[in-house]
Image 1 (cartoon, rainbow, N blue to C red):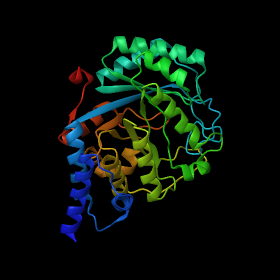
Image 2 (spheres, rainbow, N blue to C red):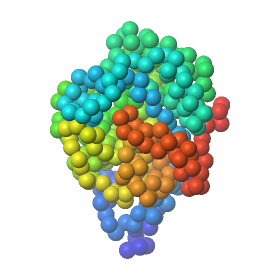
Image 3 (tube, one colour):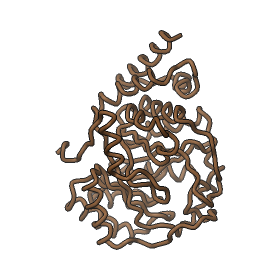
Amino acid sequence: MPAESHAFCRRLAGLALEGAPIPRAEAIRVLTDPDIPLLPLLDAAFVVRERHFGRGVRVHILNNVQNGLCPEDCNYCAQATSSAGEVPVYRMKSEEAIFDEAKKALDSGAYRYCLVLSGRGPGNERVEYLAGVVSRLKAAFPMEVCLSAGFIDASQAARLKEAGLDRYNHNLNTSEERYGSICHTHSYADRVATLTAARSVGLEVCSGLILGMGEGPEEVVEVALTLNRLDARSIPVNFYVHAPGSKLGAQNRLTPESCLRALCLFRFLNPSAEVRAAGGREANLRGLESLALYPANSLFAEGYLNTGGHAADKTLRLIEDAGFSVERVEEHE
């Protein structure tokens, strides 16, 4: 069995390097087969990761520029209208504050600065304002800029691309089959439509999921394949952490090994995409956190909207201690 399992892992790496499809049954085995040891799987995923990204790690830092005030009822979210939790509520931060935090992000090693706004989606006037902010950020700082502002259409996406936005984030969060159980105020199709609109005007998209909300392995594979079809260039793999007051409640579905297997799966099925060990990695990966860098080439630092995370200095130390290096935008210019 050891020889067979090692051959299986090498086969997955070979298919991914060739850009060939991986059979769905084999993808499911990555998540479910106890006879496939974790370390050979991580090694195979690293072969693919190294081909596309070397040993570099891209650090992303979020700026929660508008919090609360959301009419959506996503039952995993602290800001949802269905949440009984208390979160800070504020409208758009000042441009001065956004730029001050951009400078701190750059100094902390950020490759990408991610602006996040709560709410269903921006109107055209807000999009115009955001386009101006993006343009000025791009002129001032050698970082990529990503925006997450909810649902947008193709004309809004085109304006943001014109302003220099590098990527637009809109997560699928879970499978189409499960979506109705976590949200009722919009659909999975609505989310796909926003990603499609962004792609239609040439804007790169960032989209991922939250593991640990009751999904089965077949659903995880389906999300990974869907993101491949949507050509998501950045895939944040989040691991569920209960936000006090959120309707979904406490869950205990993840282990460090299951999280690492999922990261390997996303690398095999999206070989050239930026795969990020995202929200909840600290709580769910625990002592195996540094192993996430073998399939993933990106991490968040300084927390996740309403959930805390490692400070930038601890994140940079994690990267360096594992034998990887922090990647900078200037290296690609």
